[in-house]
Image 1: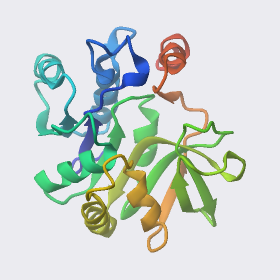
Image 2 (image 1 turned 135 degrees about the vertical axis):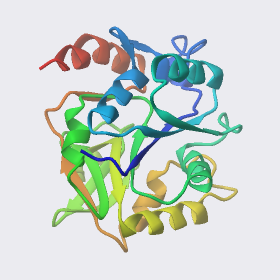
Image 3 (image 1 turned 90 degrees about the vertical axis):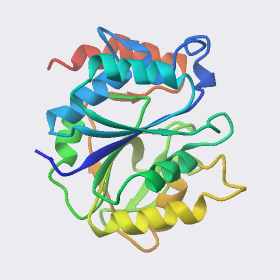
Length: 245
């Protein structure tokens, strides 16, 4: 079990594509069975010994804070506030997190990913590098896709031709060792005016030219990134139904 790492969860966004579900509720607090998306993520992280949580908040942040204080008082939580959540994306949110927390190994999670805890268990043994959970499948246009050569990711992003990709990066990863330093430097350099709407994978794509990013196959493990209503319905009707298996 990992005891020296932290987790950075990006939960600042408006999630306008899920309205009206997110009119009064941030996406990470949408119900999934008897828990929320965030609850399922924290359940997975604590199962491998992660108790230091950095969460970037913005939209309806008071609700996120209230849930963590009520349901997860045992966790050591650092809040990073992205006041520009309506006009910036994950690259800027991650840059803000890096600016406020020490350099150390960490798990990265998009706050809208519903996944079985086996995914972080599978990532846990990997050390000294970048390790991205990849669902090998035929991808849709919206999904973050990866292209791989000799077990190393050579391209990552949404714009890629779905016909040449290995599969989808689901928004869960582990970054450790010397890679963390170069990753932080790259994110800081790219989080500049003009890049407000960039996703954090923009930095990872640049790093594919100089560093090794390793795909970790999680195909078949229940998971979904909740972007649209059909994703939410799939998560509720199928994904969480398999969490007990």
